[in-house]
Image (cartoon, rainbow, N blue to C red; front, side, top):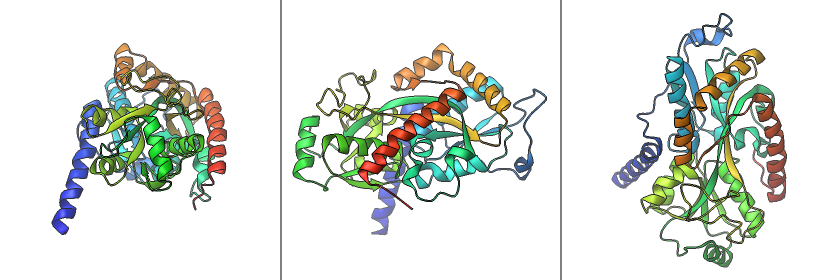
Length: 345
């Protein structure tokens, strides 16, 4: 039994690693320990920023889109700044473990994070959190968005959304869907789909979409509304079957897939979006400066090409635009949380 468990664990790890490698071709995961001196560092005032390594917290394990986007940003910032930008995966509580670390960091610009719907707009799902995402974090920008893809294990006997709906309605509460955790963007999109379609399915939360995808390929769960960038390698290799995308338009890299609206599910249009955020302790002038620099980095033509290949829409707006967007999205997803009656401690 122990040997079988070890083999299963090894297979899951290989699947998670392949998702990262197939999507962006980035190398090994690097973990970063906060140096004691960093906690008392002050915001740079002499213009010599950055003078040392930058920490990019990804509040999910390797293999998901937040991780992919964190590594793209880190790689491009590293080239631009001439300093290392080290990705620090800190999964747990649907991103809130890593987000709290970022919120408690010094306001010197040397710790940033990749934020998500779950952190900025669906945090009211939790009755209690040890920090307040609205007051303890601030956006540098809304970074990017992408549609989700309804993907199923090939053993599920459906090839269209209509067939999937018929199956789900004939077996209410029996199909298991995976997510990156309660309140994650994948969870919220699936709840919206269930409200729009009237089907009921069983939620299996994971600590990130990488582990969820591994179990989906292994047949432990039946489906996931995965982000397009990390779903693509599994669909293209035949390990998973894609049925539709959740965006308002078809995904450029998966043009054969209909949208849910085209497939007859009205009111389920949604995308997963991601921020680059920082502690509220960072001065406004520093946040504006980081925003300008990162927008310059992401404005290069080769960056647009990279995002297009992954069906990611680059947004890279201003901090003010991000705050307005957060408020709108928080209202939207709070309604879904209320109607779906989902609440966690």
